[in-house]
Image (cartoon, rainbow, N blue to C red; front, side, top):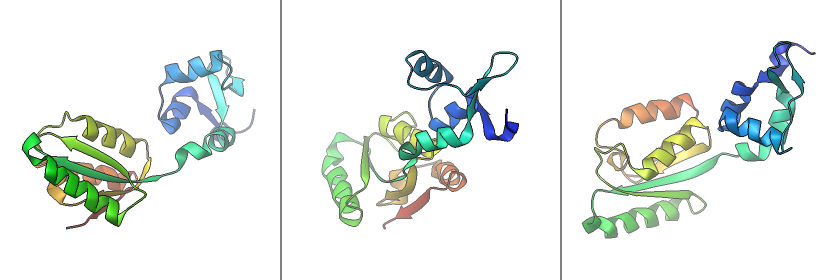
Length: 155
């Protein structure tokens, strides 16, 4: 076996790919992925360079635009935000949310957070800072900084 630093545990591979350990075990059962070796305790080890090469295409980072309004009455504003984001960033993936800026349990926000944590986003674009959250947006901005996501606020 090569140096331990060149081999990753199943947990490290799962973290790198943004999937669960259970998913990796299922992929091995299905023949989609195999470990390169096993430790004396039968723990799987994967060659880091092979995993990085196999999943290189999955690590392409995206530009993501996020638009949010608080209520159904503001749907026109949601469309204006979306149009503005697409005008400035035509190839951006657009995430739209309908819900209060105080609500942390919105589907789009959860998707956005998962993408940030999985390091899938190169640039995150908003029309206004308060479109993300009324309070707590600074925490998400710190996460973005930590994971290398650039933030653009158009207005």
